[in-house]
Image 1: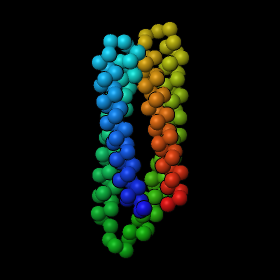
Image 2: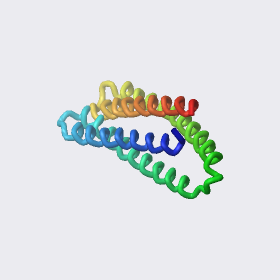
Image 3: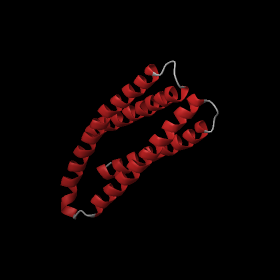
Image 4: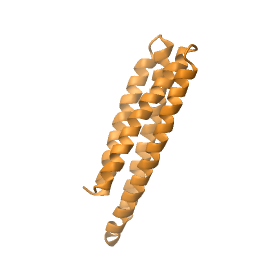
Length: 144
């Protein structure tokens, strides 16, 4: 599998997660309980951002690949692989910060507004998914 196929697979997987997050978020936001509205709001926000990232990332990847001459492909593939692995590793670190911030919201708002506690849990769930998504894909790139 070449780096372009890997990038396409990542794009599809992130778009799938984004779609599931948007649908789940819309459902949860329609509930009456403020906790679930908070979780739903986070799912919709993260879903929209992930859809944007996946769409732009896929477009940029296709544009870069299309602009390559045949002789440039091996060098470009190696460069793209290194860049993608670096990006995924940076994102893995950021995902840890997102989860920590989510827990901060949960525990700082313990006796307060349920919407903010739900928002904290929404951030923890989204950040945890992205942590494993980014980490697993970064580790897989090492083997390509």
